[in-house]
Image (cartoon, rainbow, N blue to C red; front, side, top):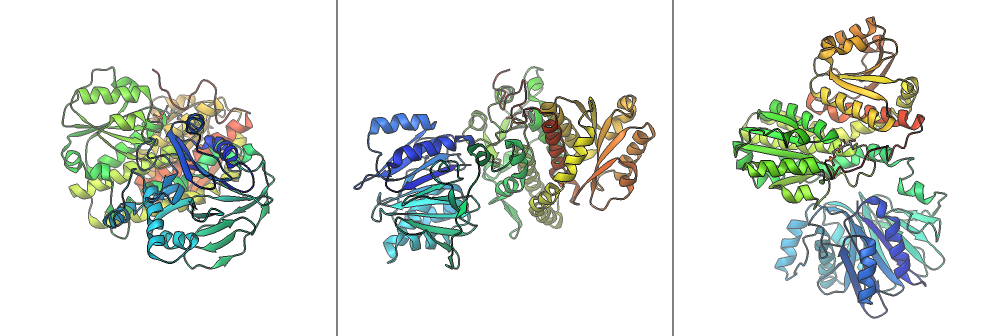
Length: 615
Ligand code: AGP
């Protein structure tokens, strides 16, 4: 997620904005920039890299000073991380400057319209389109900046938290939010703007949080004027007194980044299918696939290479691609694939999955596949990462930065992207008919809401965690689409609580693991109604007859398994191919609470790195 910061008041804005950007570094970013009005000129300094790089550049330029300024840390979604794509962005005339956190979905259509009106663009970003749309309104209508911003925002589709400055009206800054947070710090004859309160909490704890679809004109000497963007209704701003620490603010009030990221999954999945899954039109639009559609339709085989949680997402994708698009799939640990002299040829498609986009073994898999003329497609969460640059094509998960070492929202957004690809190919190949295709799209659209329902089970899951936190070993079982989820659940537990855990296909019990079962062994079984339910119930009965302790993930309203299990955690019904998006949530929370109860470092577990960039 990008970070935005602004200041208008009696003090030197530069130090406040720069320090504010440093406060937002935890959000993850790839470039930074600042715009300052010195009383005469509006100057921008921006750079790929860190805030410290920005400070060096600003010192050398010696142009960024004044009492009003806006700053930005960019987490790239459109356009590579580089200087010209960094924010702030000028409008064509140099009159306006904008910073933006979010995604404008219809920016390409607006860009064409503005180009036909003579606008020129210097970056690949959706944000530069927005600031020139605002300028276009100012050029053609007799309105002030606030009204121009409102008119422009009513023409865009997407998510935004923006701050806009007009050098012809230097005593005000206009802000707006839809889908991305924005806070206004209220000081003594000064105002602060930021993505959260961490940049200004040391100056004031009085804050106004814009609500969804609201905008504000912040002008010195009066309260901010807040109104609804759509219906222009004035809103009486509620100034709250914050009692949060910096650390609490960075984590959004959650105790750990991992918990924050677990709770971000509904938003992360919406952001991932936003602009790609057009339910009403019955379309899936993905440039990385559309541009190479023949390649995808003619492959003989898909090889998926990844590591860790991303490898588990690949296993889910194997079930989805074969079930829906009828394309043979093989899933490989990248670390094994790179050394086992595999048979690869130009009819193969390699899909690599990586949250960080920097995993060394996955990079090596790409190199090997390209040496054998296979087409390589990447599913990454970091725009401009090494893997995203090495692949022939790709699709980003828009999960936003994942700070916790244990991967959570990356996993569910990877499955979301891979499901969209499989559905798109299945539709193109005719292996899924129109009605099923629409049924999947409609069901996918309900998943974020269904995850929100699972998250409401958190207190119950915490109680379940308490009952098994002292176990020395744990078994996770699942069948079909939920077998990879069992593996993922086991990985989550072992990597943050250090309890040994193994995932198995439930049917594998008889081939060895059942020897482990006794009253000391908690067994987490995924037993949703879709997917061999009766078989799983039999497996549960086998465990129970050997005094195993059963914690079951079941479909809402299940009474059968409830009779057999020590604890059940309910998830809403969905189509089988999408159950992993729901059944993984309780397992994330279960491992989180156990690790917290055991006093482990949840966000930075021992021996682990967020990105394994070496072998
Ligand atoms: C999962 O919780 C771990 N953090 C780890 O297994 C991770 O998934 C693996 O290292 C792959 O990382 P990547 O997705 O960034 O390539």
